[in-house]
Image (cartoon, rainbow, N blue to C red; front, top):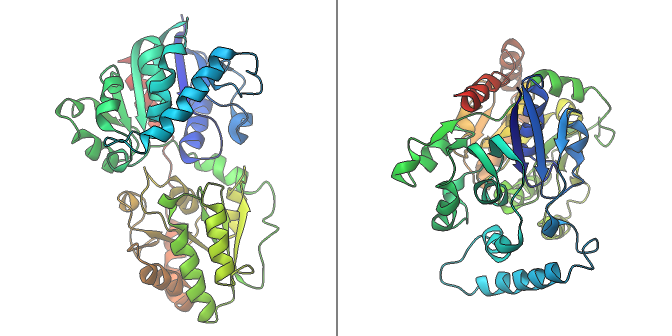
Length: 390
């Protein structure tokens, strides 16, 4: 008899955890497992990569758009209540993360899932974990943490109520595992490591699907991939672009991703007159086409759960400059197969400049990348099987 598995994630919009989950779902042996997927929000660009043997469940009633719920007075009441609680939260001494406020506000009206599972898996912190912990019946519950959780705004005491109901907490990097383990004594024996699933074969195949038409063959094409949020350090990238322009380099710096910082960052670009040099491409379902064809890949992140896009750029053998977020050394050997620089503007600038000015250094890095087996974590599927079978 097949084991019943449930995965829960916010959505399958483009992001590191989302890409990792899609890769995992494509690797799972469907002859052994009956798999359900619960998405809190539908319509993500990566949904088309979910294999046909995965059963996608209906979105929980509260999370259906307000337009579809226009005749639900109960939902309207709780939406108003949540909105008020989010505003009040800003003035409290012990501020909660917005997802914690939402769950606390609507917990009473979210119906538990009827189906009983062998394994239930929250593939992200926040709402997916709250739902698996409190609204799902399962013999075993797992919760993924794919961010630098210890340094997030999540109230750890609030979250403990849910994590205490979870059998195993899964960290996606050694740094994350270590930092989570230190939060509570009982977490030490509860945290396991499962790296984000990265499949080089799939990445290489997708990178050949089309052309990076926006790239300028007469200039150096620099690329950054990541949501337009503070944690990705885009302001620093724009400052570095300003320095490159003033130094007379002929380049175009492209960004793939969307997010709440877009207007603010666009304003900064206009202030520095970088409209022809720093270009937001928005969302791209397939960023690998651009990765394969860029001259330099730059990641200016302040923090990362792992640094999935850096590992993907490495698979595609790109010269990489990445900042010294905690997990960077798990991906890059500094000055061997890439560059790890401090997180200030001057050092990021020097890192990019090193590739531009020192051809011999760039050639050495490229030679190392060409002679190295591409990064792959598809073997993590065996660790995953171990977790759910034992």
